[in-house]
Length: 209
Image (cartoon, rainbow, N blue to C red):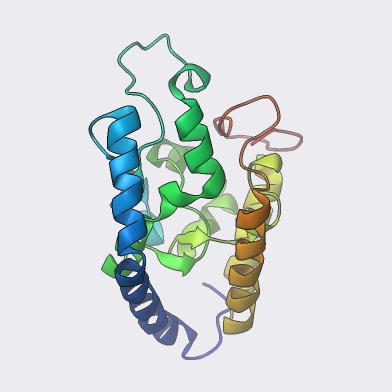
C-alpha cells in the first residue's frame, strides 16, 4: 500500500482529468504539427502504440509519437532505427504528448513511476514490483533525478520512494523539476546508447539503465 495522505488519490485523479483534458485542447496545434512532422519524416503510422503494465500490473495501450523507423529487419538495433529527426523529437519530449490521452482515460497519472515493458513484470523482485501500487506517470522521480543516466537499481529505488511518500507537495515539486529537466534535455539516453538498456532482472547493483 502507498503512504498517500487521506483523500489524495481521488483528488489527484480529478486533477489528472482536468489537467490532461485542458492540455489536449491547448496543445492541439502542437499535437497536429508534431503528427505532420512525424508523417513527413518517418511515414505511417504516426503513433507508437504498445502494451504496458499499469496500476496493479493491469495492461493498457500506451500512446506516443513514433520516433523510430519500423523494425523491418530484426538485425537492426535501436541506434540504426533512431533517425536524427527521432533523436530531436525525443530530446524535446514532444513524443510524450499523446500520453495525455492515457492520463485522461485513467491508464496513467501525470506523476508516478514510468510504465515499463510487460516483459519486465516477471523479472521484478517483490520490492521492485511495488512500483505498480500506484498509477504509472508521464513523469516521476526518475525523470527528474537523472532519467536514463541512472542505473536500474537507482530507478527502482526512486519508484518505491515515490510509492511510500506520494503527496500533493511531492507531485508539485516533480512537475516543476520536470519542466527544468525538459528545457535542459537531461538524461535522455544512457551513456553510449541511443535508448535505455533492457532490464534483465535479478540483482541491479551497478547495472546500467
